[in-house]
Amino acid sequence: MSAVRISARTPNWKYIVTLDLLTWHAREEAYDLLVDPGEKDDLAEGTGRLPEYLLFDECMCAAVEAVR
Image (cartoon, rainbow, N blue to C red; front, top):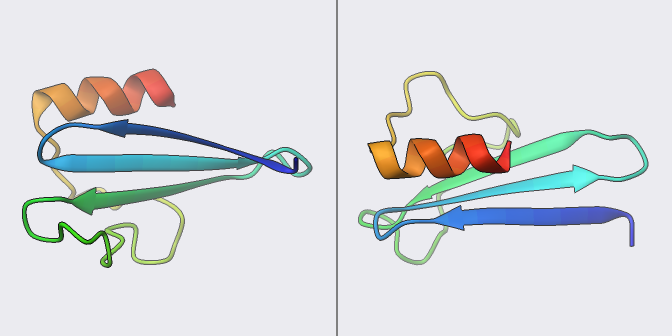
């Protein structure tokens, strides 16, 4: 196994971080499940980092911080 995936989910959001165990590089993904229930539009926009303007609700903020 060369990577580990950890996720957090609330009714409105899904957050995933993939950690490459060889390089220790972390790649983030986030999905707005109300707008994108099929999880097709990664809000990290392919960069692997969440944009600063992304505003999670309080519950999701706590979940993301716990995963990070």
